[in-house]
Image (cartoon, rainbow, N blue to C red; front, side, top):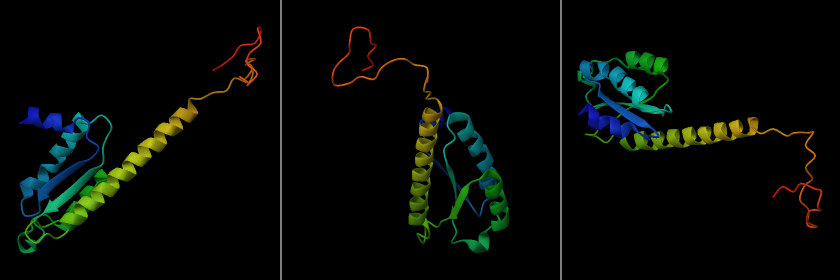
Length: 143
């Protein structure tokens, strides 16, 4: 199973990790899944944490405050959903899509900034710019 899951991580632009708010072991495994993401994804993609079964508040074993502290510490987005009532299911995917777009835009900005930083202009360069007249025999031309 682990061999198969590692192939799913490669090239990921984002990861959704779900856990059951009525199951402590499920929440405890989130840290393990975060480790898997870190291990298999070169560029750290955004991770969206989803607490499932929000319709079962009376059976909840993970207090919201515990989850909030965890997500703040790990810098994760978080939402609770219910497949049974459809609560927040659509919002989960819309929010995740927005997160992916923002992350992709930031990567593009960072990439462009690095290109600009690595561009240098040699003020002592004696190369003459190309003109519509062409190049004379002694001039270097850049095309």
